[in-house]
Image (cartoon, rainbow, N blue to C red; front, top):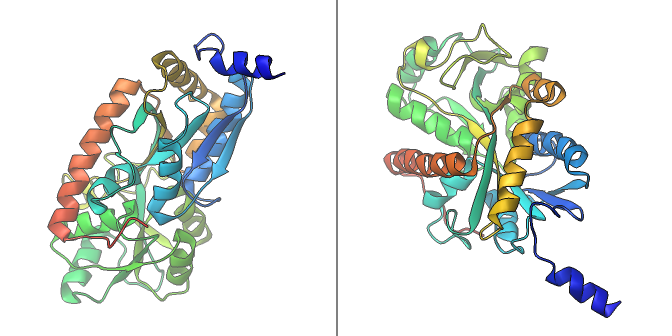
Length: 317
């Protein structure tokens, strides 16, 4: 038995024999959010195509740092992966002393999906368009409050970018989770939010919130009648959230390439695309090299926003 175990441990990981056992996919967020939804949808598809279970492991906390550190320090064999998000790029500037390097300690596999944020207001608010929101914000500076799941997350930075481009001062209220902030908005204690599609759409569809724009470069296929912020008077404005698969650095290239190809195939499945698009999530799928370039571009973009808005965090943990 001991000799057998040693032989298994010594067997090199190649694309041909990978995977030979279950894969753990870490979601550095709590269950029920956008990252969890994308992780579980993709894990189900990959389990079928790879012939081994892909098990989602939720490891929320510390603005995704707990889950990301776990994967950064995991064996580089392809059996521990993480569904990263735009927070990966944001945290580089937000936390100068991360317990990992967002570039050196990970091997990009594929950009899985992107999702615009939805700019939504409480129905009691008078604004029905971006122009009306800007006018009200200028008439009442510092009086319109918006929630986020924590300082420096994608909804927070989308709002700060809006402040910069529109020349207004919407006030940030950080919460310890997106659901709590949305509940306060639905209750009328806040004015508006820049929310991820999976968490915001149900409230818009039920009438508890009123959507006035999306933050993407183009209109959302889920809500095609909703204009973008850019076409509503702020040309060039673009923000959103993304979901991408990473492996620990030094994972064999053949394994990374195989995972990337399997993800691309899964994202062409009508069933997978329908599940994602129903939540306002747009499937992407690209090469490890393309994803690496995208991550670096995101780091630069959000560093500029955080510096302009003077956004800082105390510590990583």
